[in-house]
Image (cartoon, rainbow, N blue to C red; front, top):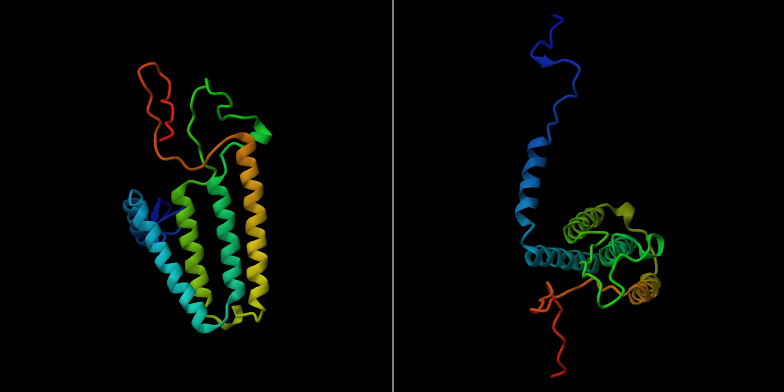
Length: 188
């Protein structure tokens, strides 16, 4: 048979993916969880607590935990950084009070931050079931080094925020008065 179907199988295409129904179900769950930001982060915090208890009870897997913390620090930096780096492409945020307000656009959106953190935490949790990942280390040194790395990185990031005058967190959309200007803040 020289037709497109020989023996009931399509010719020339990739083989069918047996995991496709599972991937589709996962995508539906992710799509449904998107508007529920608080519940997603609470679930991540609960899973992190279970992971911390497991590591504490096992008294090991400090390298896995350290790698997890470094990865999440990197994700946090992407979350609080602007999508366009003003050092490389010039300031895109308003630099004067009379310029048009443009919202802060993150380099790493909140959902991707959560999803990447969740996947990393699940991989770290799975690694605690394999003794080969339990490398003996003196954990206080790792903890001290992580805190130093965190503070140095955040100091640099905050200096960047001050220099280019942006704030990655806002409390909502600005409300403008009749004259088109934002209302002045009162000192009550």
